[in-house]
Image (cartoon, rainbow, N blue to C red):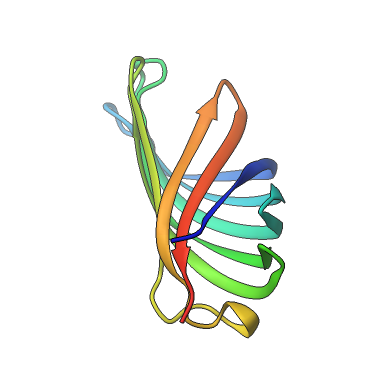
Length: 130
C-alpha cells in the first residue's frame, strides 16, 4: 500500500461558537489548508470542535475535501477526521470516504494520521487506488 507523506499549512481558521456553556465550548470551524509533499493541493474543511477550559484538552470531528495531486495523480476526495487531545497525548486520524474520489483519484481508499507538533503539521496517508 503506497504511503503519501508531507506537511500542510492552515491558511484560515474561522470558528463560530455554537454552545459556550461550562464544561466545553462547542464550535463549528471552517478551515482552509495548503498541502506540500506527496499531496500537493488545497482543501476546505468543516469541523465541530469541543474545547475544554483545561489547556490543551479538546476534540473534533469533521470532513475535508482535498483538491490536487497524490503522487502526481490529480483529482479530489473527502476525508473524515476524528481527533482527541490532552496535555500529554493526541490522536488525530483521517479516513478517505469510500467512493468520494474523482478524476485520477477515482476509487482511492485508505487512511492515516496527522501530527501537530506545536503548530507544525505533518501527515501520512496510506492509500490504495482501484
